[in-house]
Figure (cartoon, rainbow, N blue to C red):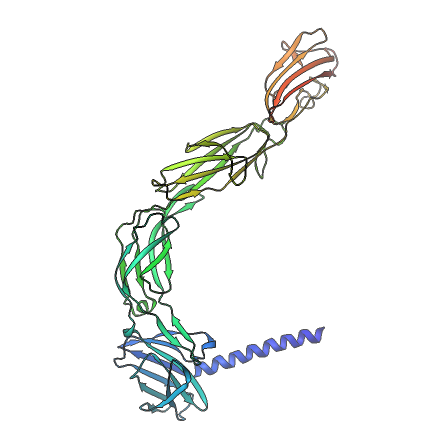
Length: 447
């Protein structure tokens, strides 16, 4: 096993060392291209193209040159090849060599060149930008309705593909990379608001129509480019008039109000979901973008909202869930023409099964804070009444909320120890009535 590990590590080392040697050999020779009084834009193509010298875009053929710095002063020869690949190579003359530097005046572009020295060949392709320039006359927005997700920009101008070919004749193209900039709205979780932000999109190739994500506010679009003109500091720019957006965005929040003091209520404060014990009061808030003109909260008992059980139009909605089961809630928004709709996340509210249990013993006035109050244990009880009587039928206490309890007093004084009786009438979140009767044993010494 150790031998295998050592061999793998040695193999990685040798490959790494070979890469260093190869890169070193490439940088030992240098190719410099210029044209039209400007340095050429240099693009490194994929290795599979065989263009080891790179792809160069010159501003024009005016005073265009290729300068090759060889490893020594041995002879340097030149060839030209066409779209079909290096098999079409033909020798060219006219290069001037001075020591290890050979300079060729370029008389033809949109073709490939081969530089040879000491049995090594370097392949490069030259593109004449003046033959395929980017021209941006104007940009406008499409007036089509329903541009909810993507907005179409119409470009008046031209920008043919900047084509080059591999040494085997495979066609390739250099991306122009136009930049579209505009304003939009993004949701800020910290401030709970949509804020205006600057957006940019990259369009790889020129087209008479391009699409970008629809902005969520009115804005103008600016198109600049391309990456070659940017390199020369000659970027072209065109902007639209103000675009009136129809796209919309919505965000909704749901916050539940919890009964912190109801310590005898089960599942009163669930931590990983909404609902729990009924009644569950939840505040829903709607946050919308500029083009929204109508909102609606949809309530459904189906996760796909195939059955809507309630609808509300409030921007802030307080709702109390009283029924056992699962309810799904979402916010739906639309623009003035109803051509664009947006949906918030879906909130799942789960109300648990009702439960009601009464203890039969407590000891008021004996040990404060320990079993000194008679309280029921409950969950999802939406209405409640409780009467407590002594053995002669005299009412000792009455309360109408399950989170309350009896402290064992009657008219301000502790009752005598013994047996007392309770009657409870309640209704659960399943809409079923519940009746409980039983006795209560009070354990405490007589005063």
